[in-house]
Amino acid sequence: MKKRIEAAGTVMEFGGQVLMLCRDLKKAHGGEWGFPGGKVEGNESPSVAVARELFQETGYVAVPSELEFVDTFIFEFPEHITNYHAFRIVLKGEVAVKINNAEHSEFLWLSPKDCHNKPGAMLGVKEIIEKIYGQL
Figure 1 (cartoon, rainbow, N blue to C red):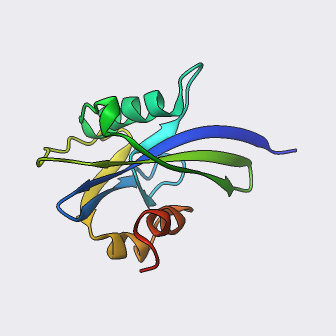
Figure 2: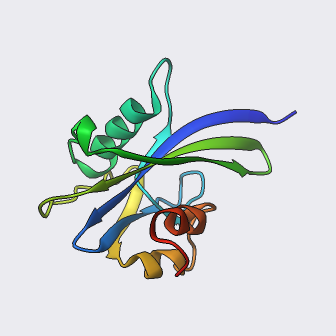
């Protein structure tokens, strides 16, 4: 039986554009593009985990009321199954993204359609984008 992992991530949106991060090549899923997020640690709730990950990966301090729960997705990898709790945050103003270079190599702001079609996107990006924005 495969190990189950709880993870949470956020579709961070500003001005119709969505933030995508490219995983550092030395990390799991290196070179793949995804949303800010990571594993739920200890007794954290998914919303607390996603706020922590947002800060660690982008420097953005999320207010809990900004986080909109989207859905929980189940993604199966060769080595484990991930319960991925997806959130969305629509920013009211522009933010200076400060990526953690130990985790990610670069970031892009893309339209939802470009996220959906991004070569090298992580497993689940298409499903999450479709859940929020519909078929593109």
